[in-house]
Image (cartoon, rainbow, N blue to C red):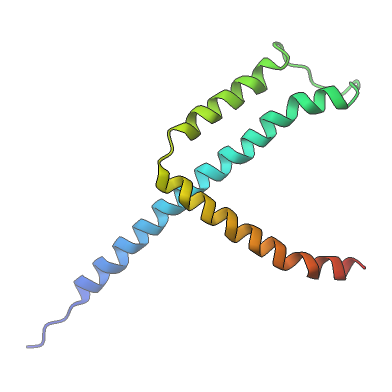
Amino acid sequence: MPAYHCADVFMFIFEWTILLLLVAVVLSAIARLATYIGTAAAVPVLRRKLPATERTIRLPGGPLIPIAALAICLLFLSAAEAKNWIAGGIALAVGAAIYAAARPARSEASA
């Protein structure tokens, strides 16, 4: 009777799938924190640059909320391991390359 290795193949595929999902989760968390850092840092700048209107929302504490959010995000990022920073840098480089490659096509289409 021949021996089939279906269980071995399944476990190989399963382990790699779990590994890729974990990497994607870490990259997603770092990307969300980076986006939130940009947002939290932009709030005080935009409050100074843009005039207040009747629809402007003012929270108690003024700039303390975005500054606290920025500090918390930096605290979370300080807990990241070196491999997470490397993976985030690689993802940033790939994204920048895709953006640079698509940019000439976008500028030609708008012209």
